Amino acid sequence: MQMNELSFGAAQPVDGYGPGFFRVGGRPMDGALCLSHGGCRAWGGLEDEDALVALAGEVDVIFVGLGAETGYLPKSLSARLEAVGVGVEVMNTPSACRTYNVLLGEGRRVALAVLPV
Image (tube, rainbow, N blue to C red; front, side, top):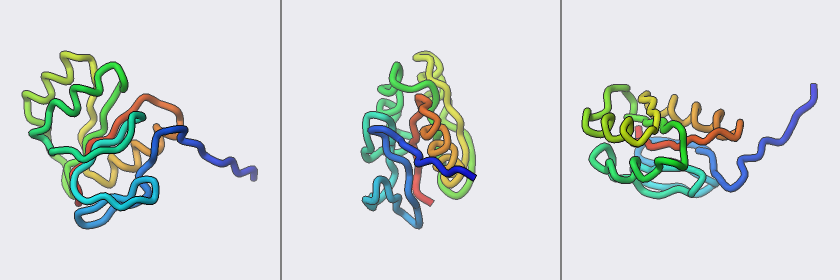
């Protein structure tokens, strides 16, 4: 079996997560965060709609992790993202991190917005 090194380019995958934190590029980060090819930054949670809308044109889909459970986005956020042509997939945070990492490794135009578990 041949093994190949996976390259994420300038983007960084989620290395790990735990209660209240994430590890991205080897750095621990507390609280909610937003990752894209543009980098990693703190995210204000579901009320911080502007941070996600600003990703329009940069990404095709945003994976939103809502912590340990799954749920729904506020209707205002869903409507704003749809209006700017950004797809969104809502799931629990562990699933969102895994899905983001896989598609990032494929070179897809994805972003991740996650609440800690």
